[in-house]
Image (cartoon, rainbow, N blue to C red; front, side, top):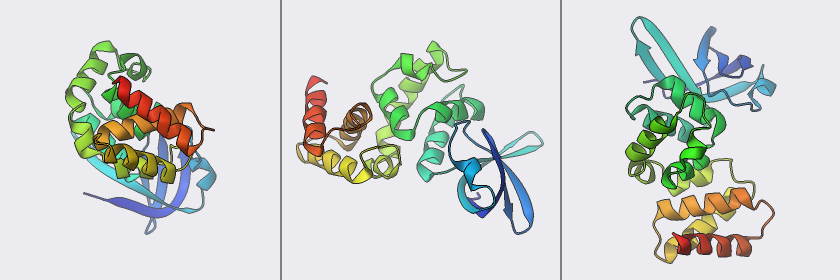
Length: 201
């Protein structure tokens, strides 16, 4: 398997990019999210990859972070979910947002993704709820650039909750949720809100 590609970004549009590696232009399928990748055209980039062969076609899927690729692979393990649906989910959710939506069994959130109906969302929850906390660690979520308050705050609060006896998965999900909903809150306020959220579960 190709672990990652590092080379000059030749072009980038939502859902696709071309990276030149050793004089060869390699086309990659990406999550269709609007991000800063088009601004990096002409610069050297690193994209984590997953290679899939379907009939006589070879597809290379690219991700800005290793955690995204890990989640993509997990979604592919769910019956009925192929690369298109997996990319659709990653196009509108960050890793932590999808993590929380699955653990909270939030079907309404999951069906926001194009092509994911209610039954598919239920199947996703059923098959991933136990796998996610084992496959994606607190460190993975903390390393993701999704937290507006910074990953160090995420780490500190998550560790504080774990010290109180909560599991890493439960703590990370609660902290991710309160940080997302309260961007300007202080560290102490976020901890209190996360504790209240955990107490309600």
